[in-house]
Image 1 (cartoon, helix red, strand yellow):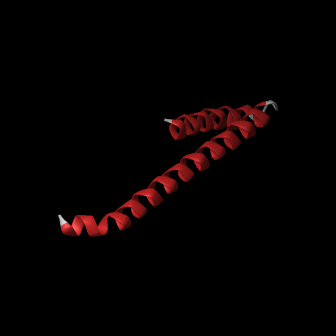
Image 2 (cartoon, helix red, strand yellow):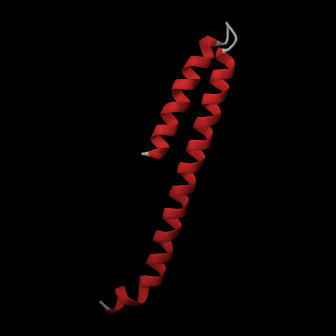
Image 3 (cartoon, one colour):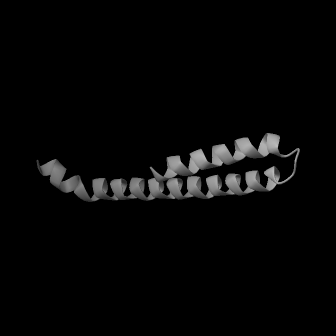
Length: 69
């Protein structure tokens, strides 16, 4: 019990740092997903780019959904 009381600031700092890194990773995934969607739409505007553009939009949308939930 005494050891748990003495180490709570370190456990709190480690949990806080993990939460911040998790949120930063989610935000990065959201931004990368948006970039993939935007590039996929731009590629899909050209006729030949649809072959690469449509899967990029699907992948970017999935990445954004995964980072939100």
